[in-house]
Length: 144
Length: 144
DNA sequence: GAAGATTGAGAGCTCAATCTTC
DNA sequence: GAAGATTGAGCTCTCAATCTTC
Image (cartoon, rainbow over all chains, first blue to last red; front, side, top):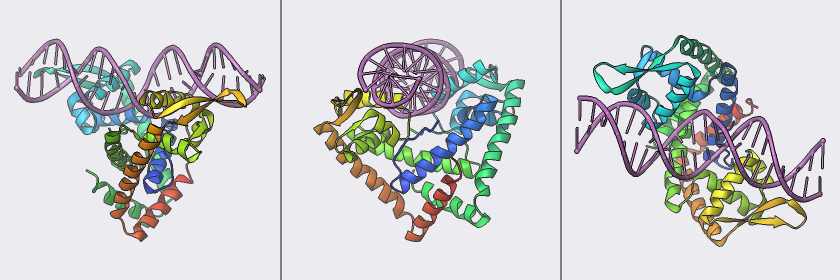
């Protein structure tokens, strides 16, 4: 449930550890509606794109490799949250289409995720939240 | 190479994203000496414990499940960085023992990791680094 | 029975190679 | 040939079940 069992003796370690803890916490709550973080993120992207999106586009928007999406959609399809459609304009392309069950799961999972986020922020004052966002951005902008 | 392809529209997402990016960056550099982050963390723990430690202890110190350690040590053993020993006092227990190659890898990987950490911190002033540490600690203390 | 380790099944990720379609 | 998707192999991780030893 904690994906990164790393040491905590440094800033890098502290950051990774905090992220891992938060991620595990979010995953645990999402499990109650049959979702994981990656699954929820995928569902949200599909919903954002208007209930249907090419697998290739999904990979780009989730910043991951195409083969990963193939498998993620396989599982989402097995869950009944997504179905695969075809693009009439390009027979190479496959579409991930949200099912009614997928829309429900996205709705519920999204609420859980947003609540987790609000709870996270509730421990920080507005100015602290802004500080954190700024620091993370500063860190992120230097590691491409 | 990026373990968490999550959305970035919130603090939680931003944190997870920053951690993922940093982790990917560290992994990429470690790959040059044949190591991954989990492998390095394990080697460091073994070294810290005096070049030898029970698998059970290793699991505890890396905050992960025992079966994960079994497999991680399998790979480390295949790499030639670790060998399995027995505890004369308890025949149930198995020891992870650092090989000379493992010690070298730990040394080199540790230097790479520390350099990555220094580089990370170089983008922050001392007071910013303290702020970040404080904020992360604040976040972490409320998610058990 | 409890503790230590392992095995089996499976989620989530990567890369390299392949297949189809453009 | 290039783009979209998939498959196969492998890493990291979890949980449940098992085996040995205490």
